Length: 424
Image (cartoon, rainbow, N blue to C red; front, side, top):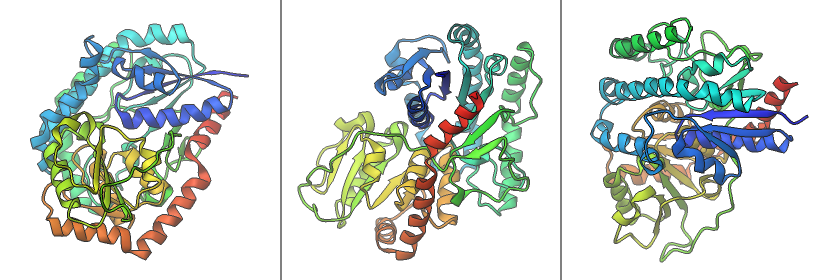
C-alpha cells in the first residue's frame, strides 16, 4: 500500500541531493515521497519532480535572498578557510551553530502545522540538530547522517569537524575541549529552547540524538572508523553512499588536449565563491597534460582567458561527470566524497569547512586519494599529486574494490528497503 514519506534535509545541496536519491528509490517502490524544505530549496526538489512544502528556517525573506543566505555566509568567512579546523572553532564553527540553533527555533513555528496537514507515515530528517516537532509528531522518524559518520559520536574516533587522524587522540581531546568551551553559551540557549518544547536538555556539545527507530549513515564501509562502541545494526545501517540518478552528460570537445585524462574540479555551490583559488587551479591545469571541467557556480562571469584544455560552467550533473573523470579535485563534501568512491575515482581533497576536514583526512589515511591544504600547495605539488591519481595502479585497485562493494549494495535502494520495512 502506498505510504507518505516526508524528507526534511538540511538547506544545503549535499543533504538535499542525498535525500533526492533515496526519494527516487522510495518512489520506485510505489510510495509517495514529499519534501519539507527551506523556501530557498523548494525549486530543487520540484526540479526532480517531487512535491515540496516550505518550512521557514529563518526570518521570511524573498526567495532569491533566501537561496543566497548560506552562499553569502560562506563567502564572508573565506579568510577563515586558511585556518586549521581547531582555528575555525571560534569563528566559522561558532557562527554556524548560532545559525543552526536559530533555524531549529524558526522551524518549530511551522513544522507542527505542516506535519499535521501532511500526516506522513514516516519522517526522514537529515540535519545536525533536533527539531522537536518531528520527535513529538507521533510518527516514526529516521535520522539520515549524510556528513561524516563521526556525526554519531564515539570517544574512540575523531570528533566531528576536527579533521583529526583516527589515532591522533591528543588532537581529539584538544578539539573536543575547545569546541565545548566555545559552544557552551549557544548550547545553553538551545537547551532552553528544548525545555520550552518539553524536551530534556542535551549534554554540552550535543545538539541531536540518534533515532530510536533507525539511523542511516551514508559512509561507505571501506572508510568507516574503528569505534570503541560498535553501532547496533538494528538501529544503525551504513548505506555505502547514496548516489542519485542524474541525467547523462556528454563530455564536450576541448580546444586542445582532447585525448588527455579528464579532471573534474568542484568546490560545491557554496565553495565556488572562492574564485581566487579556482583561478589559480585553472592556471596550473592549463600547463598540464589534462582536460578539465571546472564548476564555478554563479561566478562564471569572473573567468576570462580560460586555457583551451579547461571548460568552466555554472553547473554540472556531477555523478554523470565523475563517472567519466580520471581524477577529481573537490572540497570534501560528503556527496563528492562518496561519489568518487562509488565510481572508483581518485580524489584530491582541499578542505575548507565542516566535514570536508574529516573526509580529507580519511581519504588519505584509507588510501583512496590525497589531502592537500587548500592554499599552501605549490604548482609542482599539485602536478605530482595529479600524476599519482592518474598513474598509481595500487590506488586504482583499491578504488575498484571499494567501488564494486558500494555498487553491489546500492545505497538508495538499500535505504528504500529499510524505510519500506519500517512502514510494514
